[in-house]
Image 1 (cartoon, rainbow, N blue to C red):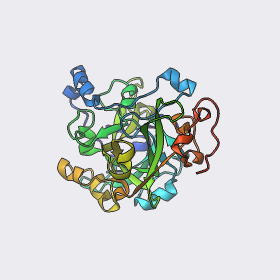
Image 2 (image 1 turned 180 degrees about the vertical axis):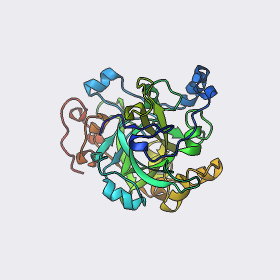
Image 3 (image 1 turned 135 degrees about the horizontal axis):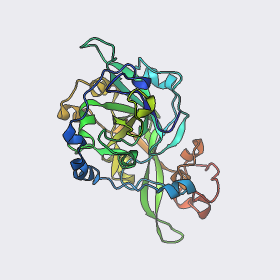
Amino acid sequence: MRQDQRVGNPYGSCPGLLAKCRPVPQETGRSRNINCQPEDRSATSAFTVRHESPKEATAGRRWHSGGMCGRYVSTRSPKDLAPLFRVTDWRPQETLTPNWNVAPTNDVWAVLERTPREADEGARAERELRPLRWGLVPSWAKDLKIGARMINARVETVHEKPAFRRAFARHRCLLPADGFYEWQQTKDPATGKARKQPYFIHPEDDQVMALAGLYEYWRDPAVKEDDDPAAWLMTCTIITTEATDTAGRVHPRMPLALTENHYDAWLDPTHHDADELRALLGQPANGHLDARPVSTAVNNVHNNGRHLLDAIAPQQRRRRDIPGRRRVPPARG
């Protein structure tokens, strides 16, 4: 599966992944106009996530969340996820490897509902499991770069911000996760210097979390033909809120999730009441979360594997644990 998950034209003949979706109207000219750029800046002003530069990415340096949910774990297969979310449409040829260090711009599993394009008016939407790129790119964006700043949407303003309000009204999804990482500001006992200690936060019973998400379609202007599968990209974002309980002791923000009895209402594309939709959202695992300190190896997006979840004592972080120096062996918790 390619990093940029391309799809068919959602507004026209719909080849590729969107072959079954009903055409939806384009954004209005006003929303696509260059005058929207000030709105774009206001839409992203709440984000405080630090993103590595292209040079850092190639050098394999550290990347960590400075503001919200910037990294999570997703290891379950479609065969595991389909029955859990009552998915009726998923394609065996679409595969993602288990990922213990999901980072922005990675492809991730998403559960969503869309009406088949060839269906009669009023037909029911079908529930699908699809790989989407993490980092929402609004339909009016000029390029993909904005997606790196759109990995999270604050629930307090998601229904108002120009970058998210259309997706909140029409394109809601669930993002299955085993848990997520957050960083706590602390002081190194050896040096006295400030540092950030990563924690893995997950349900106490290790059940899958259904993170609240939004998705969008983006038309790549570099591809001439609308019917070319490479012309369309589907991207997503995670909705966050103020953290409480276990997660709140580590970081002030956390992702929102839905319980199974709210899946249908959240995914229903005909449900548009903002207040009712926001009322469906809650803490992952109803707040029954466990947080454990893990190795700083997770700071490096190129590190992956089960060992990233091994618990360590926070004070045991040493110089050799710093990503980029050498591979960190699994910690004994």
